[in-house]
Length: 277
Image (cartoon, rainbow, N blue to C red; front, side, top):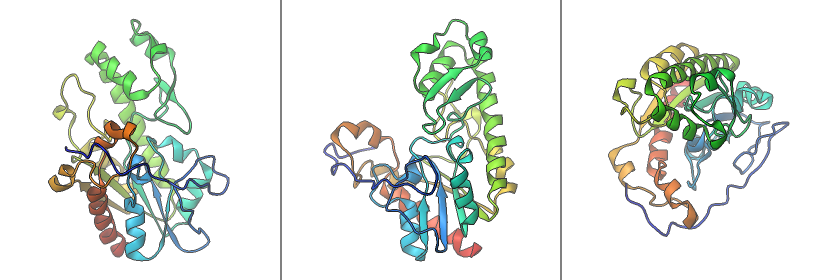
């Protein structure tokens, strides 16, 4: 990817709150007393560094309020444990749920922060027993911890990965079942869902982390539709062009999908929404 070293300056996300939720959402705040669509997801849904992320593009196209409940670096826990978000999702005409990585969830091996799900909080006795040589006090973020564990022992790490994948399927099923209205599961990435065999030995994989084709197939019966969007070669080649970020965020911005990928996601979602309305 190429990128503009200067960027276009920082972006005002107009942070706002809804109802009783403890989460801070991207604004402007939408009127939930009128018919609306709900969008649940991680950094791409939130639209970090993107002036008009795909939820706003969908709104501009269909003319219906689209409430963006996305959270940066979120996992399923941020939403499934928030009563307001789940109620708002059920009240929506359609809820779009972005596929989020399996690493940012509390599980049998470690606990994550209830709102900032990418933050590692504590480990279980089981994980400390499996990796006796590891000092878990060195870790603050899940992905960093998991990368180190795989380097220590890919064989032992396999048990951790399997736990995360099993927990992801169970948690996604539960969350989708709690959404009483129509829902769309959105895969948005630079690659299609893939098998674990395609991941390099010393690499933990690409976002959405650890989510495979088989896992997507397992949750498909619990949603109204599944939309897969793999960013085009042209979209990826744009790098950070037209992204809005501070100079210190240049590396983070260069690893994210840009405006053209959001446009591609919006177009695919509008087609799916038209079929469901």
